[in-house]
Length: 199
Image (cartoon, rainbow, N blue to C red):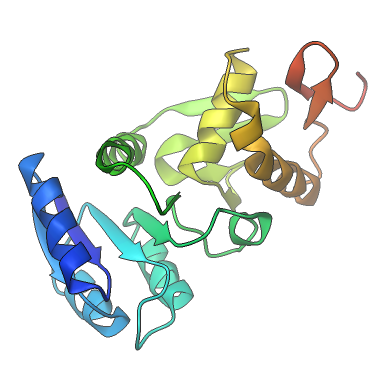
């Protein structure tokens, strides 16, 4: 996989470059937003991994440009994911908060790449998720984690409900904006479930 990795911390960049290359990836590095834009539009990358605080160009603008190019983006953040990030109209495919184990980044890059290459359409009642496009009902972008939660709920599979809470709040907000009858609700003794308005 061809990856562009960007962060202003040169030591961190070279550490993660080495880590990703050991997994067989071809890794190019950048240290600011202007370099990301220049490199991403000079060459084709399978994935961009970038800090949420790159200098020179606003990260939101970079993600917007990469979304238009259909290039998957993973954002590395110094704080936990919150609903404001997940409800942003310009959304990365996934976010990873420091501190994390190296294997978490390796696994996430593989998972995001697998989804981006997928032609699977996840359907449940009045919901659909085009997994390869990271689109809910063809209209609103969702993250890798939100897709995992919807899939687990549709298939009645177990998942970490505590970690899922910010994503569930975001998904319900998106479903409301789409005027869908299906919502995610907490059911006593069962946990979170997909329910429709008539339940």
